[in-house]
Image 1: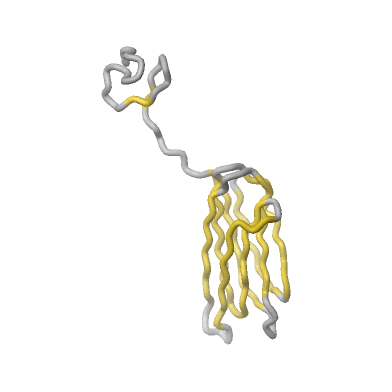
Image 2: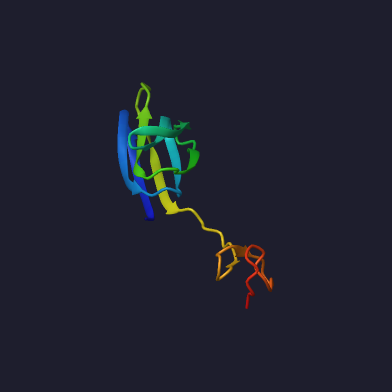
Length: 134
C-alpha cells in the first residue's frame, strides 16, 4: 500500500492522525515543518511509539524549521502520527506530511531452475546442485 498525506496543523495540546494499515518492510517518511511553536512528532504502530522527533519553529515571520523522520516497519500494523504541542503560549502551526511505501526490493539476479539457488551472471553450472544453466 502506498500512501501520501499532507496536513496543516494548528496545535494546542495533542492530535493523532490515522495513516492506515501497513505491511512489514513498509518505509514511512515524515516531514514536519513548524512555522512557530514547539511540536513533537511520534510515529506509532498499533498505538505504541516506535520513533520520535521534534522541532521548535522560530516564529515572527522568520521562516520555518523542518524535522524529518524515516522508519522501516518490522511488523504489520496500524500506523498513526501523534503530534504534541507542550504548553507554549499561542500553540504551534505548521504542516506535516507522511509517505508510506514498500521498501525497494533489490534484484537478486538469476536463480537455478532446478534448486533455486542464486547464480552469478554468466555462470554455466549451478554452484549448489551442478545443473547446467542456459
